[in-house]
Image 1 (cartoon, helix red, strand yellow):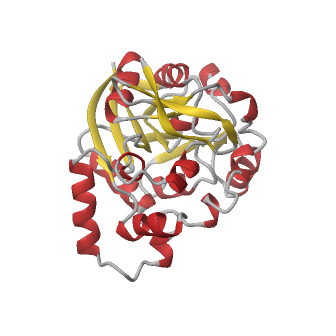
Image 2 (cartoon, rainbow, N blue to C red):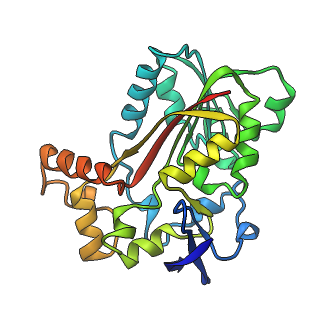
Length: 276
């Protein structure tokens, strides 16, 4: 059973959003897959004063790499497939310790990867026809862009070796800016045609288990600090982590992050699962 959630899709303002009363999965009130074309780069044109004009947290790549290295001490990891790899920054980092390649539907980003010597595939089709198997498949801020996530996860499962690992990082539908601070500008920023689904921890776990994986880790992560949230609340814009980076020290931001994670309202989810 779904109920309306405050907000609307900012590039389709007549379309609202709704939330599952049981698991807090957030979806559009109407499907908008007809306006999405990842191959042509429709996602790159979304910013309109947001998004790509601001940098991502500086530790994203190193944080993910360190987590995978730690995971490799518990599970055998040699080959990695990074789905939705963009211009291959994560693959470059993975290549320091692993064999890594990617899937990227957008032609511009794919061409960039190829020119940089990164092995990248346009879609799953060719891989499914081959005998390629991977120890780890990663989806960093990808699953929220997928209109048929069950189909994708089932197809990826076939590319994992037995007991291979699936790693998903995705926005949290329970983000404090949405559920506690109720920032209207952040609602407009977050709800758009390229985010057909925002997951809560339980919604993401249920999806993954339905597709034939066993969840071994399902945690929150806070990527953005207190200065970012204050900037949203006072200016109605992202980028506080860059504009106001001098306001708070590491200790304050770490404590703030711990509190948000402990209350389930961090900005990001981190899930690790094993193929059955």
